[in-house]
Length: 354
Ligand SMILES: [Zn+2]
Image (cartoon, rainbow, N blue to C red; front, side, top):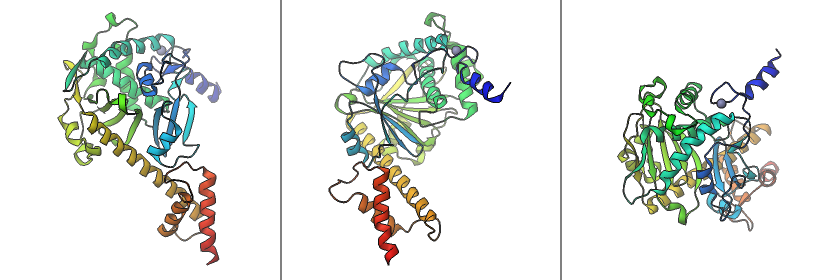
């Protein structure tokens, strides 16, 4: 058979069972009950109403709900090009990735886990579900973000397969038929642990979002709504020995580790003011990645124009950045690629004339 046809067929096979045709449309990569909280659009919580903004910077990906206006995004992120804001797209709702049966199975743990959101405390607390269920639930999100290719992160192939196998072997279309005790005996689950931090009610006063922290693999780190999830394939949290992580380094190590064989899922409480500082720090960090990404475009331009070496001199970069943010444009306002080009040309012409 022709390779393209084989690929086409494989693309249509359910990613969870690897068996049935992926007939399901509108699959949520991040469960609807979480997505709607990020989107937070008053009065409209039904499926199909999801809309939001995707921010892409280099390899990073963030997702904001539509309650967050473009002006607000510019305020928090600084300069954004139209390419970087993809309004009204549904990157986290995908067709033909699962079969109807597997979609139902994922729905079963989502349904169970969604009940834990109503529980909250001004102290560290137990969410009321077994840690094995919590582990499967969070694994299912990390895995879906990874295999969809839309989540700003990709696990290694063996890691993807470990999570798929765990989910495939344990999930059932009826919760009563699920045996969570298998998890602690499974080879693919060995070493997998997670820590979960939550700032209850943070979302009442501040916009929330979804963001995969690009710098850490030990553990993988996902910021989602009021939660910060640390997910490790080898019970390894060493990345944060060095990374202060915007003020919550101590909390990460103080948080309980949830294991496949654990008791109830434990959630570490983060006060709202600490979460606010954390989020501001994170956004500042993402903003800096954005500046780096403009700088690398300028370096490419420099090389294309036949400049010496591989990078544009800092003094010229600085001038171009000043030009970009000049006039009445406040620092960090939206610029298009054309703006960047126009500013670059204006500054470079001055140097060429010299
Ligand atoms: Zn399936």
